[in-house]
Image (cartoon, helix red, strand yellow):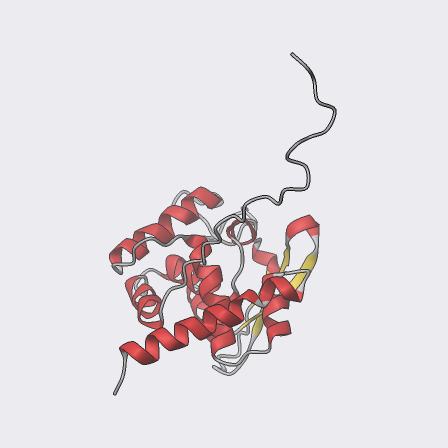
Length: 204
């Protein structure tokens, strides 16, 4: 049997892979999620942190108490910040808006006194793992009747709704920790689709 010296498929373009649009919660869904966890301060702080900043699961799980700056003056217009290391250990600071600040401050007021440096603690006083945080978010999604969503859905939800509300794309890029604006720009089309869908469904 002869051996050919040229690859017969060289130069033939690969078939395009189907691109699935990320799941994004509607405003009604994320409002229901916020309502579902409002009576548990730690879990509310976790959910609000995801929704108001778009942080990754690993970033939230690795947060230390000292990484978070929350205003203590009681002024609802005050803002805070969270310092973190993203992919490639690249450091960045993300603003905590008033909703995130209120939720985190309420949690800190009842956070157990412990030597554990982690921001979010389990009932035993140890650091919450990423897997535990996933379970917490999943529990409240189920309670809110939200299907086919995950923790990462909250990151897409933050980005899409921020763009939809007119937030500067570079601000969203910085919050998400994207190195390229092109990566962030995908949320422009998602925001438009969401607007079309909601204005159609909620016709007056």
